[in-house]
Amino acid sequence: MNVVSLFNGMNTGRQALENVGIKVNKYYSSEIKPYAIELTQHHFPDTIQVGDVTKWKEWDIDWKSIDLILSGSPCQDLSAAGKRAGINGKKSSLFFTFVDILNHIKSLNPNVLFLQENVGSASKLDVGIMSRELGVYPVRINSKLVVAQLRDRYYWSNIRTKETMFDLVTDIPQPKDRGILLKNIITSGDVDRNKSRCLIERYIGAIPKSHDAIQRYLNERVEFGSYTVVKEGDLLRAFNKIEMCRLQGFPDNYCDILTTEKSGSLLGDGWTLPVIEHIFSFINK
Image (cartoon, rainbow, N blue to C red):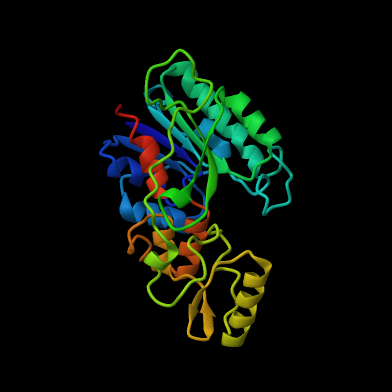
């Protein structure tokens, strides 16, 4: 397949295609975060980086050859954790850039497949707007079925499990519950819940550096209900790099070339690998 991946992040789409046995001919990545690009090129050196999504008309791509377009457009203005500016907010409005690119490809290749993902706490109004733009309503999948974290997300796609006359709803079933608990994925210590709260981009980056400040910060976050922590004796700690990879379904060493903070940024802002594998498993069908 020839693939365009917008807001590519840590390249989960490419890894998922490889894992389900779909060969990639050309993979175009639109990403501006330097360490996201570094991780992508480390695992898949043949990835073609095309840069800023808003400059897509300048990209050197044979658009009619594209078989699949991927988009995880920014959720900051849609999420309950944000300021709720909505789909027309400064960041989340980049969704419409994805729509412009998708429609351009469709005009040249009507059979192009697409996948769009966004946060499960988006308002019904914004979900409706996105659905009408894409011509299909999403399936809602919580990553808790396949990993040890709560991660509620909408997925819009025209990938189908069967031929049908009616395609107004994304035709992807729920993945089978793998029964993975948080205690199964931590490298040491104890946890007080079965599933982690949703891993977010600022999970590691906001944590202070000094020992006492770390303990105060983590205790406050636990009381506030926004963080999941690990207890080591009488002390609290954040997830380490291996645990964060496991929370998103990646191999333990996937982010070895990055710092813990950079790994947390990409993993917290990214897709859950087994969920994307599940969706892509229907492409061949």
